[in-house]
Structure formats: C-alpha cells, structure tokens
Length: 253
Image (tube, rainbow, N blue to C red; front, side, top):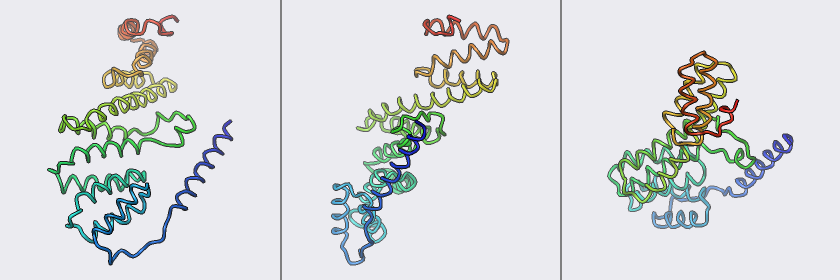
C-alpha cells in the first residue's frame, strides 16, 4: 500500500510537471505594445485560466507603465494571478506592496482577504490531501498568519463583503491549529514528558476551547497529572472531562 501511494505521488508530480511544461510559451516582444493592448491580453489570459501568460503581461505593464491608467487594477490582478499560480511568495510580496502604496484604496479589504487566502493556501499540501495523509503536525506558521490576516480584516473592516467568508475560514484555521498543538501534546506523552504534555494540552483548552480537539486535550491532562502525582489537578481535569464528555473511554478505565 505504501509503495502504491509513493508511486501515485510520483505519477501525480510527473503529470503536474508535464502540464506546466505544456503550458509554457516562448517569451514575446512587448516593448511596442500599448498599455491598453497589454491589459486586454492579460485579462483575456486570466479569463482563459492562463495565469502564467497573464502575469507576463501584467508585469510588463507594471514595469513600463507604473503610473498608467491601469496601475491599481494591474496590481490587484497580479495578486490574484500569483494566487492562482500557487506562488505565495510573489503573491505576498505584491500584497504587501499594494498595502504600502495604497492604504486608503477602496479595495484594501479585498487585499487583506487575499493575504489570508494566500497564507491559507501555503499551509495546504495538495498531495497529502489527495492521498489522505494526515499532516496536521506540519509547521503551522502559515496557518497562524492566515488567522491573523482574517482577524485583521474583520476588525478593521467588519462590514466588508469578505468578512463572512473570513470568519468561516478562521473556524477551519482554529481547528487546524488546535490539532497541531494536540499532536505536540501527544508526542510529549510518548516521550513521557508529562509536564510538557499537560502544558500543551492546557494551551489547547485556553486558546481553542470550542474545537474538536478539546476532549483529547482533557484526556491528556488527566493522564499527565496522574503520572505526575498531581492528584488535585488530575481530579479537576477528570471532573471537567466528565461534565463535558461523559462517554470518554478514559472515564471508564
């Protein structure tokens, strides 16, 4: 089964590389094209889903006509195109530049929203999802930043049309971060590092109390405090567990 999964991953990677190669196009001359022509080509490419070609036209516009009539829209389109190309580094660079140069833009809420989407995208790993591999233990820095981006959007622009979706995504990110901390706590239990396990489980309860990870965090706390001989703390954790999850297997042991 493992060999098949590995082979499937290689095959998928090969298909992606082949697809990228087939979509590559030779560089073409843009020096004589007007900004109108360049932007028209960029929009057509985006509508057709050819974001690599769109980026070439948009970058040419951005460098040759930085103060042209399309300057703001070009920057917004570049952010979206890089997002669709799954190029978070370029997307974030353009997002931060837009925020720096256009702090009062009517589209600033959209840009903050895109920052969250890009960081959330950077936290995903397509092939793990396709193969059903649980990687909730991966570095959560992009998920943490995405949560901060959406939180900033909601606080600064609560009436934004993107606020509702940002809130929904924050729920998913909160679950993701809780799962990560739970994985760390479980690792500490395997290492018999009970103090560290209890501390990390407590962090799950304090920071992510309304997530599916809460029950297991309480169970880890009960076990950790039992192992440490901290009877009052163990009894309190067990009491909370019983009140909220009376069907927990740990309570029946």
